[in-house]
Length: 143
Image (cartoon, rainbow, N blue to C red; front, top):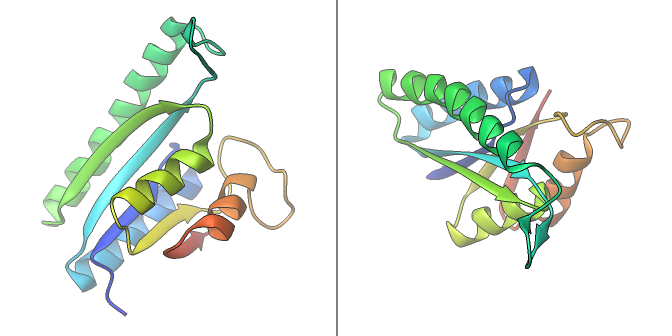
């Protein structure tokens, strides 16, 4: 099976770094495009916008994400692998990952087994587990 479009949900953890490296290997072999996607969590309110997190904290998180992702972009570009980066604020990481995977017709999601959201499951992180259950495309979970 050849994967043309690979989505890599990224949170800056070692697990997501390993997933990115695995996605690079696949992209190199299959001549694929990679999309790196980071979701900054916040609860949406029609009156206040994203209200769970202070706007200054959100801005700081966006800047940190951009720094991490810049290094990923450079790595992919050095290997001549096309890469797109998306940073989005949303109330549900899983929902945002699934929505992007569906809207951009991703063939594969490569993600770390655990992330910053904690361990709600013994074997898989809660985000990885939920994405694997809900995705319409193939999902590779990297330890």
